[in-house]
Length: 301
Image (spheres, rainbow, N blue to C red):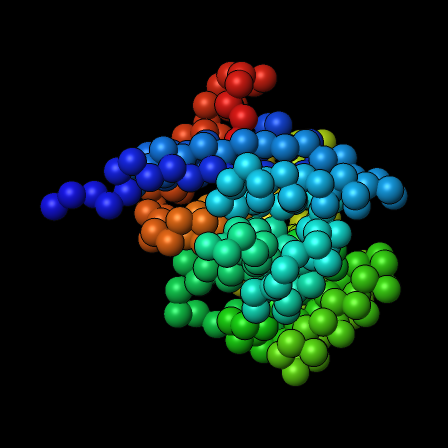
């Protein structure tokens, strides 16, 4: 039986600041090759800034004119790009942020958010049929917003969001309530010890644990073996928080699953093909391993 993708070309890109080392391009290109496509994925640097909206608009229009099938969007453009799009899919409208843009057959730019679907899928994989229970989410920024909506969609019993910025917590609580009719608690970091005594799970949605932001978002001594602990950071895979949680007997969920699933969801949006998620996870692990063996090598996303 012939492969309908043979001879098909896909052109995609990633817009954001510091996207050179991203592993998203090779993940997409490797999956495209498995489907028999000519899949080209390029990183497009966009620093953002106060007066950068016209530049972002020009990038979007240029991608449309050049025949891009789609774009992934990362910091600092996930929210700024929204008013430039022709319409929003349900996930982007719900979250209030866009990380994936599809140029449809009519050339319309349609915004989606695969961060929320990616995190939900990673939790589904890790917890299987087990409940989320009562969860503490540390970080109310862009990643925290996707995580909060995903947890509510999965049936969390209660959710407490912790951030130093009370306005971010309030905005996230309002967004979740508007989308789901679910009320989440808002707390400050000093309340974490008390919150974790009643929690079943905890998620880190802050930059703590990344190579350029080492450390943990809270004292791991607060963790108990009954906790499941998830991190949205995936480089490194084993963050300081996850390593400490493993030592304390916790079930840990790395950021790899979210990274793979959000990329797979974007691939499916761009191509209409079903992604091989187990193969994409294998690719991601291999890319990270190669990167660790050869720091600075040209293994850019």
